[in-house]
Image 1 (cartoon, rainbow, N blue to C red):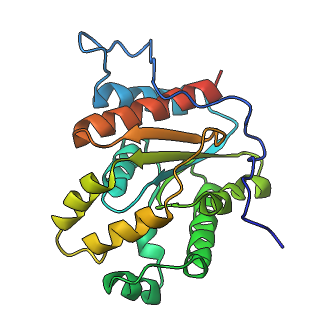
Image 2: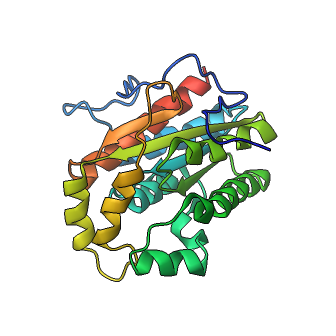
Amino acid sequence: MLSYDSAIAAKGQDVSSSVPVTASLSNTNPGPSQQPTVAQMSSIASSMAKDSPSQFNHIWLVTGPAGCGKTTVAEHIAQVHGMPYIEGDAYHTAANVEKMRTGVPLTDADRWDWLTQLRDESMRRLNEGARGVVVTCSALKRKYRDVIRVAAYYDSSILIHFIYLDASEEVLLQRVSQRQGHYMGANMVHSQFDILERPSTDEKDVISIDVSRSIEQVKQDALAQVLEVMEQQQQ
């Protein structure tokens, strides 16, 4: 039986080198601000996909506790790169949604089938011809992230990347309390932080992004780092 108690090094992925946190993007003509625009990033991503096809397919997991901006960031990355987008919340069972709506934290057992379904759906999209897919998934514990990493053992052409959106509990509580019509209430943020295992330094497939900044800064940072990783894989 597969154990999720220890980290899994993804097959086909170089786990000996870390993913850089700051993008350099020397060929993007960033201008005075030293930051490429979204239009420039989209053009670069399109050119990379057409002119320098990679031998790898990518699963990008946008992760973090409730309120960190997973959906906003993931949708932006998917749109710019022309990748399919999978909203993780849509794959929870009705029982899981009811638990969260009433403030009952999910257990590990509640999450296993959900995580497996997200992994399988991501692989299905790649098998249909997508070169990459963007997924939102809280992935609060290391063993949850390891469930997704198993995809690379099924298919050595798959590279797994986690984009961890990092912020304090206080910041996320404030954001969630302002949301309307979402089943994840502010009372669930504390329970998520109770079990949160922030990615450790030996999880080399993780990019951490500070989301206490404006959403535009976060989106631009995420795009820049995705582009850098894609460029590195094509060298």
